[in-house]
Length: 294
Image (tube, rainbow, N blue to C red; front, top):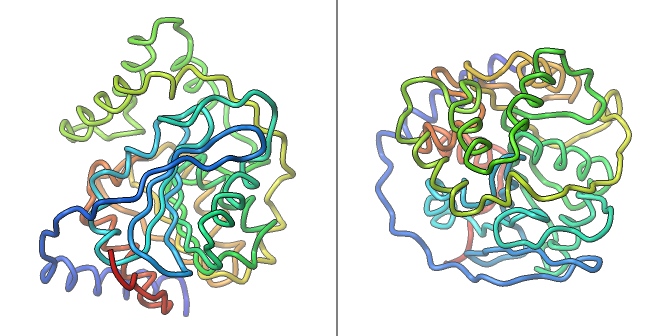
């Protein structure tokens, strides 16, 4: 099926889903830590089954960023979300490590034989590295405003990152993220407020020391993937992430791309219902089975 056809089908199904969707109450998750190579990862899990949807957060904020879509995922799927090292409740790493290996260790601990990964920004970069190394684990892949190892980022992108991280004051770092027009587009004040709340509650998200070990470029290796892949990109996201999204959709066989209008890098904060609808439809179209209970 061509990319444009897949996008049309997704939009048609989304319209029907939004019309019939009902508000659901959050499912009480299981919360715990898992040991990974001398460190720990905090995770939350709802639903049961050998297959799971794994929510992998971006490089700005911890897994609380999924709060607005978590109840919907828990209602329909066995779902796991976790804080990468140094984010949220997970302690900072004490040594260099491979981020994709952490994800594999978590899935092994949770006895998850197959996963659909929904990953944002740098989380998408980790998910792509995971897909190349652990493809047997992966049934479906959704990347949102993805980054990509080895991609030649523009001076504009790199200077934005540099300027956002210039201050030594936590409040300045939080303000830089909250006011970033590419993370959340103008007019989405509630999403901007929520981002501030999450970062204020976990300022270590912006200050911890990352020590990920280097990975090879994902291009052109991703052309070997044979995994149903959906690439979501906000219309207001920065040009570099737009370029990565385009590169992935033309490189991964059968990948589909959907541009979400009036949305930035963190679209699940801005438009949670539309975001979940797109992911739900994609997983359903590819036969991903729902959770057998909460």
